[in-house]
Image (cartoon, rainbow, N blue to C red):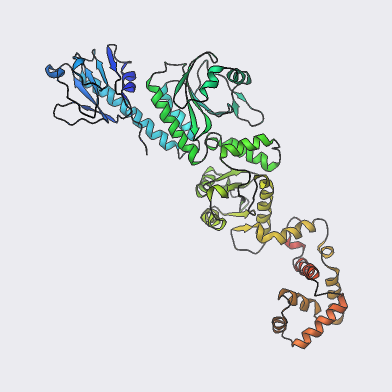
Length: 521
């Protein structure tokens, strides 16, 4: 875990609340401080510490001769600052008569930022990292803080104050967004347009909003992902805040590079988009392209869709947030959400570079322990096919549950023929879907006590292998040839025609698997 390292500026900002007679020299000030130490003349000096010197003691004017390290110093009481080595930042606190109290205050500042650092990193494992991070940052900035994306959608704003812009609700996405009038003002403002290229924390004037904003643009390589903003409404923005917001931006960037800022900040909106997309209500191609951009997905990536339902109708585990989290933990680039009274999972196979068998294996324990069964779509080669992929997964689950399979998951590819029969059977009874020639054979067998129907079925199943067919039927080869000749005459069957053989095999399947085996018919 990376550490947030303070600079002398942050310490100076913090001390101003308790003392009035301060002198600060930022010469050589670096963000490298991890703690404070009491200075002793014989101790080695390290840059990672700031050293407290008690200026009330007689030898207070004896400063070290620093070579290379140039550490920072805090001096309590009176001191001859001219004796401080060049290149060493220092803070002279003339009205600090008690160095013990000053030490305690500085220790509290370090502890405050250590706690903040810990909370930022804990947020990375939460379901709403942006909200968690901004809430943890409120005591650091003491002002409202929010994040918006390139289109001014508000990704997180956990705290408001009088005077802060009031966000509108976008009726199309349900997300909060800056008012259109404010967006138009920004786009016409030269100062704002210049801020879009900054790579370091900067201050945006009060010209448009009515209050200054400390901001940090979030860059994922050369992609502008959004902006962190601190509104100067409840306290003054201090110079040390620049370093803090820069570190906050780096932490958020780690979210972006791991998954997506869009996912973390707007998880419910991602799920809502998927639901609308599967329903077929998303028609705006620009919105789809923007959605793919925020997910770092491509239109022509490889996708997979899963549909999970509880084995028992009254089971409720599938609706728990914990179950969704467990599923997503097993799938690096997948989104699990509740849809149509079950769990739907959308997976980008190109991003995760995972094999489908390995993926299914990783979910096996979740399925068994949660008493869930799952339908799996075919591999999809275009994002546009996701609605059809969802139907595949749903049909595979339905057909699989009605089969005698002992598996917990069902692949659409394994149930393709059953699906075709089911859909065809919705318009015609199975007897009218199969070849009439087989019905002729069945009627002939019933009248004449023959076995031509079964003989033809076995012959085709064994791929017209005479030896295997004879052995399977326990008849002589000459008897088989006789039967095949009779079959061709009785039913007018041409066994040399590949298309007719395929039609006959499908017809056998339909008759053997009657309508009772096709749910929904």
